[in-house]
Image (cartoon, rainbow over all chains, first blue to last red; front, side, top):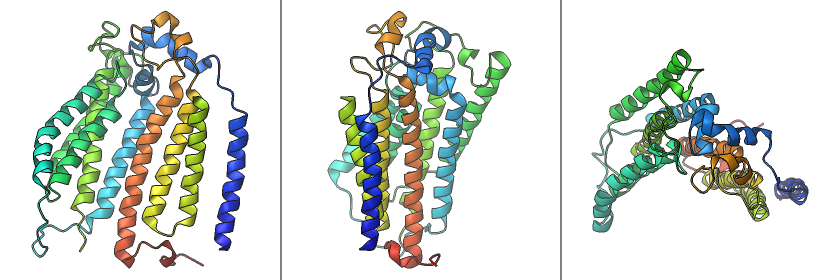
Length: 233
Length: 118
């Protein structure tokens, strides 16, 4: 009871701070200095139509490399934490009931299309809303659908790990190429900027975002596969 | 519009914190934390919104020369993209740890885990 009172007092204090912030909030009429720089210089400097993509992949590319590393660490720790409980064979466990005709047939139809859509989203990350992280999540949702239709389906851990580590190494290699050939780490000018607004434009951004998409898809898939392979003993 | 989104975000943060503070079940606490997470994302995106402007994608609707006067602030959007991904990683980790905790004590009630309590 006393704990609830403390919780409510805490929430009331926080709520009054939020109320003060909310009542005092006035939307900006103009872009601030940083945003104005990005808006004015993205088209000439980076060549990406999507300003958010330009910020994530080029202006703040190093942060994104760190973010992908955090995701990799998460996938590795989830695998490690759950590894001890993983059961190799389900000899003694009764087979699960089948998941139903609609789900199975629907999965066979939809999974390739979902992967294709994910690839479309991360390849077009510099032109349209979306990008590597979103596309990777869409690709991983195809894996989730496969797992839903057959929870006992096994995915090759070796394939996922190989894909993830190769893509990560290529990502870092492109970053180092930027130091050698262009202005700095992860600079996108190692490839020609191309026509503004076309698919092959913005230098290395489509390549880097595709790599990020593959890596994120592999990491999400490996997390879901780890969670699904963990069986209650 | 920005005010509606921001108010919703603040309310979601409070709902999530309330759930995390009062629930005893670990899974419910994790769900509450994800609600807080969503609220924070909403507030951040709402801060970058400006009335009458469009998404920061330069196409035929928004010529490059007028970009600075036509697009909303792209920086909060980039930040929230990062935050969503990290939030997903944190949620996955919490779920994995919750599973391990359940295995050790066969319960998800947080008040049963008193090993580190003094």
